[in-house]
Image 1: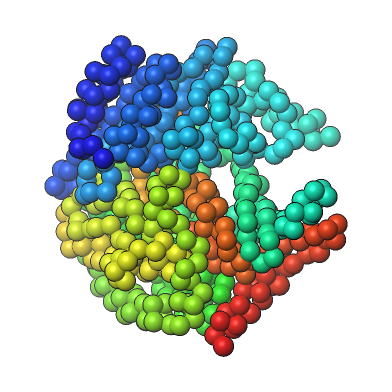
Image 2: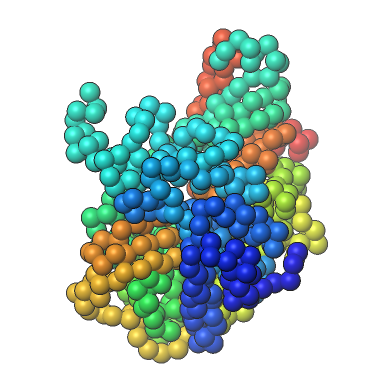
Length: 176
Length: 410
């Protein structure tokens, strides 16, 4: 395991490595308690092309904990946010690392990270069915939460015409 | 079942969706060779209630009550993680006293949850007297919860920017009396679980999760700590008042000197955490400063403030079963644009697979139960073997487990 980095060093490391492919990075520090101990969160927006490499670098730096992947339908694009934590294992040292990737709705594809982090499978399967993102190379393509007879091309988290609108508005028709 | 699976000498046993060891329906499909589990597949979603969708037309304060109803046992963790996420997005400073009160509520919930789990784990292996012992203790913890919040289960204690009820000086004697009771009860529990032969027989070297698997499969909470991974949100980061308190990672080697990652280690981890929680409540009461308990007491003003917020936030909290994370994106409207809830069990699904592989059918209840304190009595197993199909009821499965305990005792 490499030497532990501070949030600033971690951001610098990725910026040096990937230059302009890191679209933005901000560090948020929050104090809590009487002793005012700080917790750092990094919010980093990256280009899709370096996504897999970023995760690889992270795994090489220190095996991260992937909490979950959350997603937003932003109109023309879909944003996926990978919530990692690194530097855990010693007191008050962990950093929340939120890596955001935007992918176009015309080609909603992203590589799987299951080969580095097998625990990502559950959340990747969820993104596939809920947001209609195609996870390339995912070892298990089945649905996770949705029933097997869920109609194709309807994604509950989408906010466009592929969203679930007509299903809850006309429930009596669907249920026939 | 197709013919080619039966020619292989293994057969499939579906367990669930109403499952022997979980309140929430989950469907397991086991591939068995004789009594031994060769492979496991897990299917979810039987109670996906789309709470996140229901939040789209609610404001953050209304969502608190929705979040509270995600889980009966974690009815404090979810609203508080949601509050943390909103406070992160809206940059709200929580008053110090509220931070300490939040610790007390969180730890009390952990005691209730872990003690409940200990009872059901005992029931699963046929040790029902311990079930009654633990639930008697849990009643006291629930009474204390009711005393502090007004309710036993859905507490309605959380508010964005603080908590809704203070702990006043005249309440302290009652709290101290109950804590004293819980401490004595802990000694009794520790004696039963750690010194009794039956527990060791059934739980040692059973349902092993290695440290590597725990890391790779992103396990959380006591499940991962019992495998030796030092991961506890309360220790990792500074939130609420945990940064001020004396707290460390609980791993089973503190008691036994080694980490095996089996069911026994998960029992030890949870038991030690009950003791740690009592200690944390005492520390929090000692160190709690005077002051406000909520950042903005006027609800209309708070909602007006939240309505203007544009940004995103993450709330992390260590629930009894592990790390809970909520993500919120606000876009200057009444309702948040996105709300993502991730409960600890979500991450503890995949670790079930390495735990159950190689175990026996009679171990399914205790191994499945060992990651999670929620369990149910209504269950059913259908066994499909060479076109013959027969069903095992929950009672049958429970009987199998009890018989195994008896066999091992002889």
